[in-house]
Length: 374
Ligand SMILES: [Zn+2]
Image (cartoon, rainbow, N blue to C red):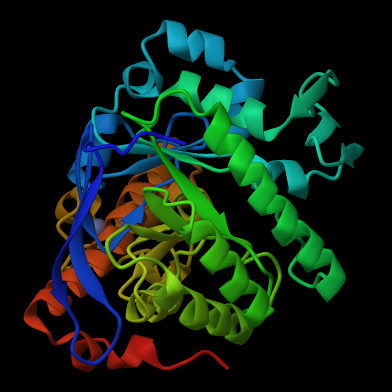
């Protein structure tokens, strides 16, 4: 069992009177994370196109990196020798690495799954890779992020009940092995992942079993893997309130306005999603809840900022006309500026919810985003 750590605490600052929403501070060895908060994704130890200094300007606090991708390239040895992932990528703030489970289970390449773990061929060079709970934790210990994730079995969104039951039971057994393998509980918090597909009783059972293991944080996994939005919502509304109130709660892979607002309503604190940078690379801007294609001719002679209310460098410096020109010319700066704005936008959205929770006006101020999905 991991020793109890004083380096990771969650302090609740305010609770909403009309929902489970809460505002709090999650302390990590690399600084505090004010929650609720969106976390940008830096898959290969870089948030695509954004320097760490620019990332800090977006008010990002905790940043993700991806265990599976970093294991393939450059390999955890290189990163450990550089002094860990924070130093390697020049990000001094809190970081989180996922376990690689999600990527491994999404692989279309030939793979074998058994009680030991997953074996697959590297899509990079074809070599055989063995991913087990022990391996995932060993890699994450070498990378050195503040929060590391348990290696879990993520069943497909439409998985039938026996399949989901088996995966959920295995996730528990693998968590026990992750705990056993974890070498750095003092400076790395291992989060458990609640699986259970869309079966609410399995979610309840999994949550109860994992909570008994007393980990420093809990995540809801296996959502946004192909289910309808209404089903995702049902799972989140059911599962989030079951998680310990004195620990951080993380909803994995979710980052749209409505999904985040609804999840915060249910008591979630942390989110991650590749949407802001992926959209940025496709010339799409997130502007006050809408998606704008900056290639569109309507922006050609539009000299206003992208969003007049946005404090980001892009909006403070450039016009829609200039962004339109960059995207049409396929200039890399265009994609960078949109990514920068999109990250700022989603962080700002969660920050404004945080402020509303502190003022106890959350359900009133965000009523539009709190209507359940159809
Ligand atoms: Zn902006």
